[in-house]
Amino acid sequence: MTWWIWLVLGLVLLAGEMLTPGAFYFMFLGISAGIVGLLSVAFPAITEPAQWILFSIVAVVSLVFFRRPLMQKFQLPPKTGHKVDSLVGQTAIALDDLGVGAVGKAELRGAAWSARNVGDRPVTKSERCKVERVDGLTLDIRNE
Image (cartoon, rainbow, N blue to C red; front, side):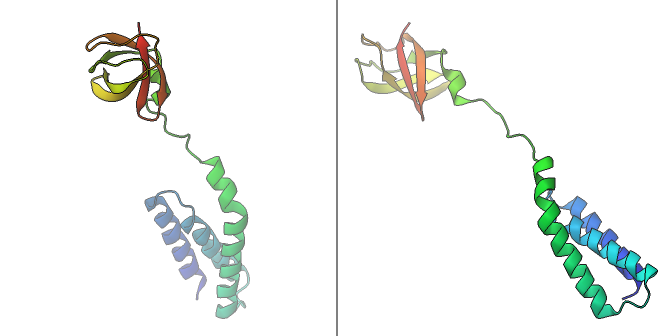
């Protein structure tokens, strides 16, 4: 292929990288095509099979050695929403009568949760309770 086809292919692949969600594959292929295009200008005696072999080698080597560090550098911080542990210390309203150690329902932030009475006395319906711990989807509550 002529040198300008390699450069156009490189630009198309780089544009393709910008349209895809950050996998960094097309970028290295585009850079490899650009390098082969520039080498074809500098050394016009490079044959077409040699150009394809060079393209393949540069693409694989760049993917193997540079993709992982680039992915780590651009890694977005994990999304932080409302952590369940932030419910500890909140006030819940018992929706059921709960004896000591019993499991029932309690309302917290407008939603009904499974609740376990970990206090030393029973909780009555509509009583305000403090969230001591969150165990999966179950709140450990005790009387305030």
